[in-house]
Amino acid sequence: MTLVIAHRGAPGYRPEHSRSAYELAIELGADAIEPDLVPTKDGVLVLRHENEVSGTTDVADHPEFRHLRTTKTVDGQTVTGWFTEDFTWAELRTLRTRERLPVLRPDSAAHDGEQPVLRLEDLLAILDAAPRPVGLVAEVKHAAYFERAGFPMGELVDAALGGAGWRHDDRLTVESFEKGVLRDLRERGTGGRLVYLQEARGSAPDEVATHGSLAPTYAAERSDDALASFATEFHGISVDLGTLMAGVDTVALDDPSPVRSGIVDRAHAVGLAVYTWTLRPENRFLPSPLRRGGDVAAFGDWERWYTSILRTGVDGVFADHPDLAVRARSVLERLERDAG
Image (cartoon, rainbow, N blue to C red; front, side):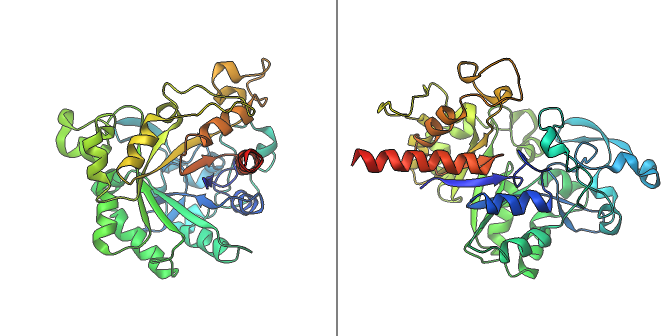
């Protein structure tokens, strides 16, 4: 069964990484929750997609933090704003969450300002209190960048998980776009599954930091030899939808045609699980043939898109609207039962 992983909670309905987004994702049937981990000045792991938080919090409305606005280069990108590593946890917890895409998701934006930024420990407590087992798929962000800035992410993650009793929990998965921090966690004896995230293009930031222009590309790391090597270290890889569905045609629900993904087949052949991101139903995020009407915020033919993705045999999908991914999975399960 393909896992449905709630991407940052349920950001299709509530501001991402907010308590209500996580709790709603559980209510909507997600099998696991995906938070992004970045540190504060005093080494607390907080749940933000990026360490720059002007787009997802009300930090710009806090005159007491105006002096902290700055410009930094993070993994080769120049960014101006407010960064978590410049705030203590006591300061950061005064901020309130906001919808990142307010024009596209006004219903979520209606909840702006309602809830504070959370720590990893807060989400672990939410999962422990859930009425059924719900997994954690924690993404470690910008590990090499933070290492240079004095924040050893492997050590911080291991300590936070250990303090909450999650270090060897069967529900635990840790992922990153950088192999170094995954290897660090393995060497520390941190439990759970390790998943290597891969962009469609470019190279891993830790590889660039070490090898510069000679760093292997993510694409090269999807060769058969590279996948076989990763299978000795990691549980799986996670790729973008473009990579997963490259050369793959979507099919209607009543079409028995197989949906084969090259990366799924090749990774499975060497024992790697495959995950993909991110399922979103709005026209803006769908392939052109599946868009319906001219409104980018309107839902297109998401059901055909989602079910075609699931038919590739992918092991897990990240979804902004976890209930829709759960519904698509149920549709396929029913069709398989009916087909006998």
